[in-house]
Image (cartoon, rainbow, N blue to C red; front, side, top):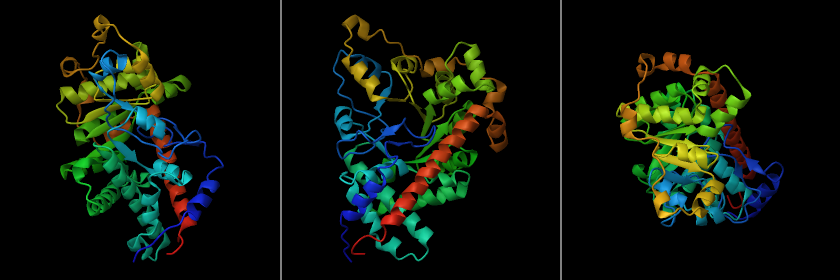
Length: 396
């Protein structure tokens, strides 16, 4: 049965989102980048989150120089930016679905409409299961469209309400993977984005053992980073600026205070330590530094696998021309060679388990993880509420 959706539900939905729609937070300290702004979105391409980039840097810019050390990832928000700094991979999330619903002319509109007209979901009598089915289909349909637009991997957010349910996370990933298989997106093109609770880290370990690639987020402590590496997570994401923000307004976190006492920025120090741990111990994980606020942050992290940079920083790098003798003056701060010389304490080299992780996570990681999860959960609920309001659509 062919079902056709018309535009009025989304037009009405867009109007209902005008109140308070100027910003969509992926959660307080949550996704692959910072604040998502839609009120300046003049074109139809909503939020894109990249995992790698192919930037047209030119041969004599700072951007060209730093790109030789790390994969510089554009934090692209609107279509104009997507054209200037095209990402080669992306993330699909509740935040993205909210953006699509608030911008009814987006190129992804049809993907959401088709999800809401899905006959399998439509046939479910339980309203909660039906909404969950619609959301899964919408995530995968949009993810499938993104996979056609970018050559790299697409990371799909796992329902944050499952953050403390290992088997629930695994079931959700299997469900999403099955839907991706139905639209012919192969597993090697996919990552599944999971919060770095102990249960999430354990789910990552089990999924990676099946060959399913995972992307652990909300990492705010060395213990989380080390446990994620031991689990074999494909990507581990650390938020530099958010740890700095916490340190400016709070005290009492031993890990942060130790970094400050050494004259180090706590976010940069965590990325450095996590990188050294991964490489010194031969773990396969790639490290992603997010919430990078300025060029000095970026220069301090050269050598890490991925650096997510704001567009203003990328533009500044692109506009800064370096003389031939200056181009090679940039220093790689992180390398496998330097990692081999880093000394870890006996306590840091333990096999991490739930108890040791809980004991080692200081107040910064606890606060930021909780805040990030709260933001993600609120967004997931908003998506379900919106889908509930516009379902059933016309002609269904």
